[in-house]
Length: 291
Image 1 (cartoon, rainbow, N blue to C red):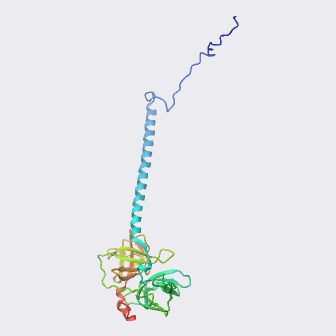
Image 2: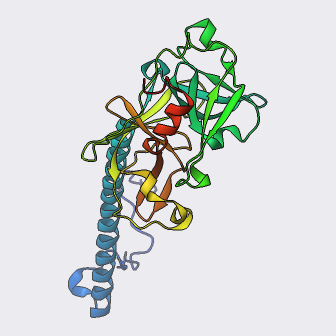
Image 3: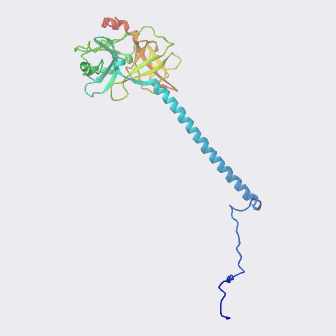
């Protein structure tokens, strides 16, 4: 039958004249077929990618190194600035404002009836002192300061005026731990700064620092200080130094901070009024001091 169609026969293409043409673009063009301009563009692109990649790697490495160095420095500072319980330094007194309940500064118990402090501590009105262990209910309540005696010296400027505090209440039960005023400072050894708490609570701060002689030039607010009656320290940790903080060495107190920390270039320096200047006068005011 002529009309039968061979179903197994593969139909021929309707248009045999059309052929598939492969077209090259910027990505798949063979290297040898590229123009010099195209080759230069590819080389420049590869160099830019390589440079950007290496810059990212170098930046990440630098940031990691800085973070490690900063963390190491911070850890070292934190080791030198630690919180200590007030029981470890029972001769330290916390001085509060009666009206605001704010902690103004710290003082030092120099006799069973007297607390020595920086004059700045009493400029905010009536104050109350906390001495002794906070675990003792009698000491925990604190004491109202009734007597404030200025301690002045002819060779000392008004910036370094001290005051001797006492109360009509019996503080002896809480102030039986007194400290002697030091007379011979070892300039080759380290000293401790005992400061007021960083935040809420009664823990004190302690940092170990080096003594600074007159190898730095005083400037700014410090240029008016008489360094003959001052003890300055350097290499401070990440720990604030506030007016009235104690300078201690070998179990004796040698100074009270006369200023807050000042930054002199790269060096942070804190200065303390030398208590040895006032020692004779203090002993005349209270015979129990250094007894």
